[in-house]
Length: 363
Length: 94
Image 1: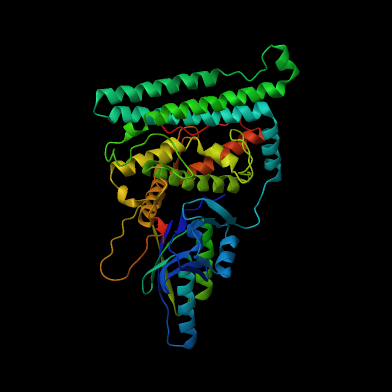
Image 2: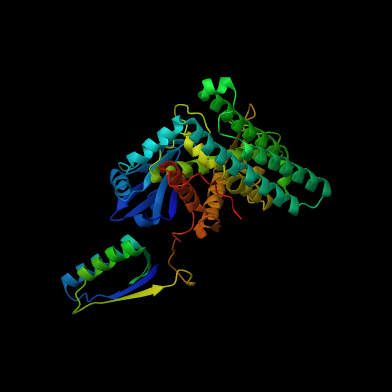
């Protein structure tokens, strides 16, 4: 399958998108701002309501396999419009079977967490190399070391039932316990990581002071920025899984809940530290995002301004154009393609062509 | 790949004017008009076959001329003067 290029983000209220032969035309206040041939697009993201796509524009999108995603202003995915998917039923069955097959589910969950821990660790070590003060270097390094300990314990986890009577009688509950410990490692790793998170910042440390993760609503500017980037990433993971023929709502590490894209959240884990968190750090250090880009609401909630959102989307899209070498495939990809590559690796594992799911760890 | 398409279409007849419009339309469907009869089209193999086929069937080889320049993807293009062009590879946020 050919991997397409760009995503069209529509954020301006009152925009109108129509079809002009094989191009999509974006009009704002009756002025044509863009005419883009459909083959340049991979998906369209519509933020907020009051943005219209004509029926013919929608038809052009689905005929060319371009998904149209409707998101809230804050980036929450509300709906998705796409062609009748070219779903591989065999793959879906393999995915669902693996979700019920606890040893297999646990091994995928373990790999997702391992990828996240490994990438968190590398990010900490990188900041440790770049920091000026010895005290901060030490704190970053020690957090990285503790994460390394968690990683080793995770690797040593055994998926064979232990030789106790209770476990042999009830292997299901034994695996549930293992799943809980995998989630425990993930939580411990996240605590260690976020405890020293503000040490990544070289600029604007007071404005982006970070105590702990808060969401719904985010309670400070840093959390707001992270949540927004995670929302963009989540959307890309959902799209990547759907393109691969997987169901983004049936996951392994994340417990399924109605309307929760559990598998997309699983796939996201390895991307969070190096794709979203790093980008947040860079944006703050380069002062591409400042306090002026946020609105502080009564009751403590923090929201992005329109300009802030646009700056973040632009940076995220630019980041997706960077080229990285995939260490396993030994091939170069744009960062934006990597979610799709990882989704296909997962599909290969589910089909039984690959012994384990292998998360992406940049060199 | 990046293809630069230029053409000369004879418009002395009504049919010629029609060919001109339809050739321009085909180019617009796959790329961007950078000057009156000059288009830059970034297309993959599949879309290039479709576009080329469409152009060749619209033109009249006895009266018109078409030229395709295949550019390297890292070719630097400088532009001076009027005509706003969006870079379709850059973030598209509106």
